[in-house]
Amino acid sequence: MAITPPSQRIWWKEPIAKIELIWIAIAFTWGLFMFFMMIYWHGAGEQNLSNEAYKTTAQQYARKAQAVIDEYTVRQENGFPVVRPPEGSDVYLIARLWQWWPILELEKDKSYRLHLSSMDWQHGFSLQPVNINVQVHPGYDMVVTVRPDQAGEYGIVCNEFCGIGHHNMVGKIYVVE
Ligand code: CUA
Image (cartoon, rainbow, N blue to C red; front, side):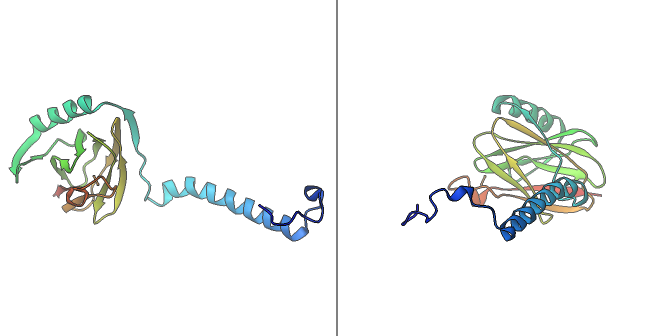
């Protein structure tokens, strides 16, 4: 909103100043550069995950997850099943208010298809200390192919605010030799 009208009523027909044209060209070129950097960095930066997403429902997803839990639970830990599925298999993690279910135990240098979905609303899967982040939505089965390259105990924290218990929404993944 202008306080006073422009002195030239037909201001949009003024020739563009050279310096302005140069800046438009610089901004446009930079924008293009950044656009192609996103594609390049996806492969070279090893930070962005190439995930797959499929439509699902909470019931459907929970059923698949429970089947894997029933088959491959090796022990209990504080009321959580510790699930150790075979190499190359589909591994399920359920996000819900306010926990990550179950605890997973994976083998170092083996690949798994890690599935993530939410039973209620949006959660954020953040794997620590490696800082891998995936958005977890209800109704979507997010699949990430993982190949842990270091043994140890990894923490999962929820990094998407999901209510009163958000700060307690932590989980665990073991990677064993
Ligand atoms: Cu789940 Cu915050």
